[in-house]
Structure formats: C-alpha cells, structure tokens
Image (cartoon, rainbow, N blue to C red; front, side):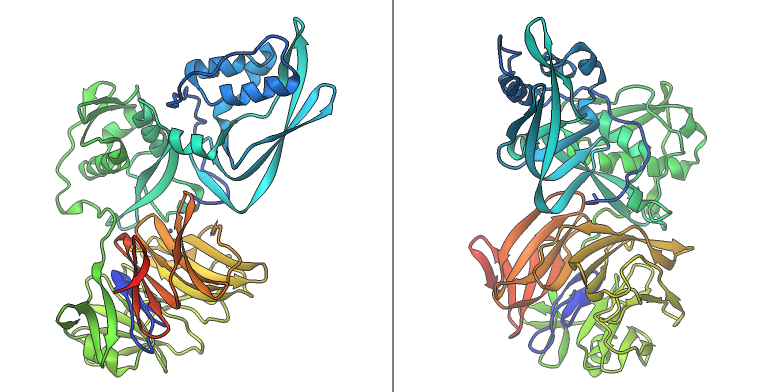
Length: 547
C-alpha cells in the first residue's frame, strides 16, 4: 500500500510529493511473551580459545571476573563456568534463561565479606524464547553474587540465572532468524524475529520455537499458524546438503492437504536463514505427502514499486526518466482533490486521498470520489490489504477509524493514550500490523501493534510494542520492509533518520538535511526523504543526497 503524507507515501510503494506536498508514505521491546518450552539446549558459541577454570587462591572478584569470561563458552553445558560455582549453585543455575548484553566494562563492588555486586551498563537483553528487548536509554543493572569457601577456595554459591555477554560477543555469537506466521487471510507471511546462538543445531531450535507459537503481541488471531496445537518434534531436525528432514509427533497426521502445504511453507521460510532449500516432513518416521499449494502460496515480503510516487506540475504518478508515469483511472481524480496526502492500495486500483474536505476514496472505474471521513485535523490516511482506509485526527491518537470501500465505518479500540497526538500512522504491507508515531505526555513514542479483525473487518489494535525512540520531536515514520521501520526526527535543527528492526537493535542512518517526510521502499537502500523545499533525498555511501 502506498502512501503519501503531508507528503505522499505508498502502501505498495514509496510515495513522495514534491513542492508543497510531502511524502508519507513493524520483537517487541517490552511486554509479556508467549507460553512455550524453556530452551535448555547446550549453546556452542564460536569462541576461541576456551577460557580456563579457577586459578588457585583467587580473590572473590578474581573468581567473578574469570567466571564471566568462562560463561561466554557453553561447551559441555557451560562445563568450565560451572567450575566456579558450588555444587548446589551449579545444579540450580540456568544459563539459558536469558542473555544480558553489556555495553562497556562491568564494575565490581564487595558489599559484604561474602557478597560482590556486579554492575552492568545495558540497554538490551534476550529472553529464553529468543525475543530481543531494547530499552530507550542505557541503564545500570546490578547483579548480586554470593561466595562460599570450598576446600579453602572461593566459589560462587548464589547467582541469578542467565549469562552476560559484551555487545561484541553477542554480535559474534547470535544471529537473527524470522519465524513466519500467516495473516488471517493466509495471503501473506508475517515475521516474528528471534535471536538464537550460532551453532550446528540452530534448525532444531527454530522449528521448536515455530511450534511454540508467535510472540504475545502477534496473538489474538492477528496471525495464524497451520500447525495443530500440541505439535512437537519427534527428533532433532536433520539437515544435509540443503535438504531438511523433520519428524513430527502425531498431531499433524490428520491435517488436510492445504494445511500440510502451509506447514511446509512456514518451515521453509522460517529456515531460510540457515540455507535450507527443501523441507520433507514425516510423522513418527512415516513420510508425509505434501501437495502443491498452487495459488494458495502466501506472499513473503510484499514488494513495493521502487520509484517514488509524486505530485509534480499538476500530475500524479511514479517518477520516471521521461516524466511522470500516471495511474490510469486515478491520477486525474486525485489531482482534482488538491491532495496533501495519498495512500495507494496494493494493485493500484484505489487510493485514499486527504484533501481540504477530509479523506476521500478514489477508485478506478468509479466516476466520483467517495468522501469517507470529514473530521477536522486528519493526518495522512493509510489503506490496508482488505481496502479498509484508516483515518485519525492529529490531536487524538485514540480516535482511529477503519472505513470500508462501501463507506462502512468501524471505530478501532486500542490502548493508545487518549491524550496522545499522532504524527503518522501506517499499516504494514501484509495488513497485519500498524505503525504509529505519537507524542505523549511522557515524550515521543513509536508503537507497533497487531491489527485485530473479525472476518476480515478491523476491530482493534492489539498489545502495543514500544520501540525505543529518542526524545527528539517526531516528524514521520515509515515501513522499510516486513521487519523494519524508520523514523525521521528533529535533533539540533537536523533531520535524523533511525532504523528499527522489530525484535532487534536500532541503528542510526545519519542526517537528511531539511527532511520533513520519510518513505520506505524495498529495504534500506530505497528509503527516500522529502525536504521542505521539494527535494527527494536517498541514502548513499557519502550520506543523504538529492536524486
């Protein structure tokens, strides 16, 4: 879906508006997690050389320092690290419960004769399900370690579960993998990003996580799985020469042909990051016949048009070398509305247009636009894969409406603060998630939430995933692809672009001088920024440059 926004943006393409028009065109950082089995597998991080065990007559702080180093190696179920623990502490310690990602060096303070407090500067962590969380600001986490003397040598007797890794060690030891689930129409695949240690049996871990289900914010029917509840692996995943054999318990044996085809697509896409090309399924060793899904195959990472969508010299369409490529049946009617924002539907057969009288729906083949929402102070609309147009007044972020192509209006329930104002709202290209950039009494917030539907009709937004934006005044936000979004914010009189992976770390993409609107394309290289004077900027090796 293409959208232009006080500017122009596209739901299916980057949408930019020149001159007076701008272009406008989402694992959770917090919140509860889904139920599922706790990961207890041994970790085989690629660290070398192996750390050594306790040195004789070490002090408590020396023992703790060497334990932290030893805990970077999970060889033999953290065999070396457990040498620093008492027998009871070794039995109780669950190193796989979490990973705390350390920024800089830790600090140690002896708080009693038998206790050392370890201070960690951190802003991110991984839980036992592989879900990444990142806080808005870096803070300090204090971990307490108790010590006992064992045969005259200090050993750790009490400690919290989990491990601590430096940022460098984390980046070397963990990789991001997207689990894929279906939107309610089964037309699109929706990613759920997890982080797993780099190792030979990562395929088993991915499949176990897929069977355990999606993260909590993607539940409530917002996304679906083809696997029957209770399905488990009957043995480890076998990967050989790009071909993967997966043996399941009995639950999937009675599934219909289409469900089996959908299961296979979920497996093949979720295992795509580990170079898996073909998946064969079996039940207790008996091969499972999976039919060709035909036209029922869901779309992975819906693409958008790579050219910007613009208004220029009284014409509306995609920028091309020889001018503007207009949209038959749409462009003239859109221009006639004197638009300040446009959202183009997937398939480019209709568009939601913000003009002076409100939001209109323009459809190819229909003579006149249909006025959908005439409330004051509306922001740029967005249109989803079901052709519902989403609107909201700038001064009330909780007053969201979804309006069908026939004019049927649905008030959307959400937990967005009622006193929040909203800068931008964009539905994802799979129609399953909503991105919102808002101002609250606590400062700017960037939310991603699942779209909750009843028989395809939007009814509400699910749990808000709060991505860690800075306190800079927000200008705009856009989807970049199916698992990342970008923001444009004002900082020290500069327009700063920041990239957020949904379920991963954020990164800065530099400053785009004069930027007022941001529009996503197919990945980071196709992000466009529109300036106040009508220039379109694109990121190059040397920075943001006019195209």
